[in-house]
Image (tube, rainbow, N blue to C red; front, side, top):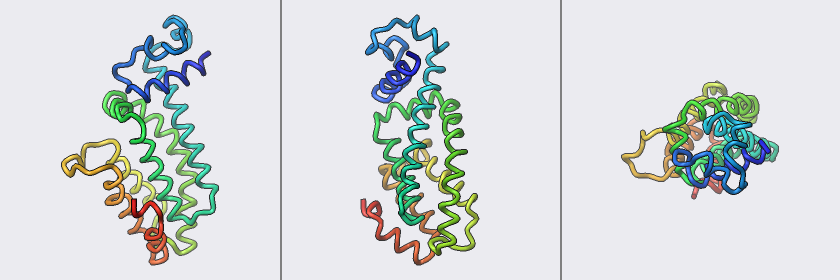
Length: 200
């Protein structure tokens, strides 16, 4: 029952946002009482925390699937971060708006858990890119990955670029993609230019 409550609540959060959802509204499709929910979760925040664990675990599994493909390192980075952007803005944006503004500590904790895992799998992508001549030999992989993450976060979790009235995808091309391009050798830049995402 706990897993079912989490599954339905996550779906409802993503459809309707977080702020205006009560426990009763969250489990309405299950036809159970709020008393049943409180057997498993002490509050809406605790339920949301469990939902975020499920959500970000799903993201991690999808990232792993991308990493098992035979793409070159440049394409892999672009696909990973562009795919994440699609997830962040492909659902009802009220969900991520509420998460960023009203529950940042829960989101930070969820992102921190997945970031530790992703660091272990993404750093080798950058290291291989250096070894294979796609990225400059002067790149420090840990710093480069941190730089990409900081720029990505500035698109999705701040109002830093609101004044430009540009879509997240335009911001991505002008920030994250430019940063990745700066990491590249001529060989890597050719991969960016030929990447199907480049012209979207």
